[in-house]
Amino acid sequence: MPNFDDIMKMAQNAQAELMKAQEGLDKLEVEGLSGGGLVKVRASAKGRIIAVEIDESLLAPSEKQMVEDLVAAAINDARAKADQVAGAEMQKMTSGLPLPPGFKMPF
Image (cartoon, rainbow, N blue to C red; front, side):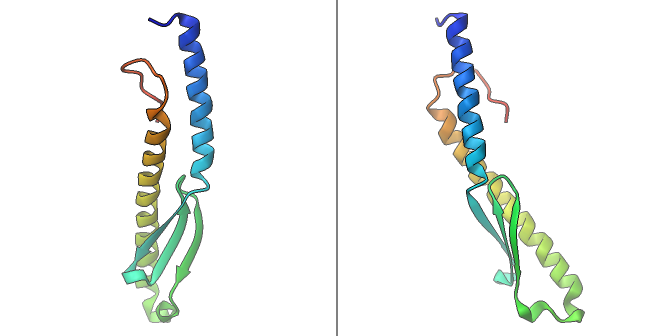
């Protein structure tokens, strides 16, 4: 069984790795789509919105409500994909850490 100093070192190493992984998530990008690709939202795996693209065919004033709905749907799609990518990346990072059985990371 590891002693207290070893456990503290493992926790510090895990925290450093977690911080590094969190920083990397902002570099991973996902794309959310709605309206069959008429609205696209690019976001980082941390959920930061990078860009919004709206097809010109939706820019008629009569389409305002639909465009708003499609933008919201694309943002939600991008957010869901960002959560998936973030979860997969964090799983990869923690799978190699020598953590004690039952130890839960704070995420």
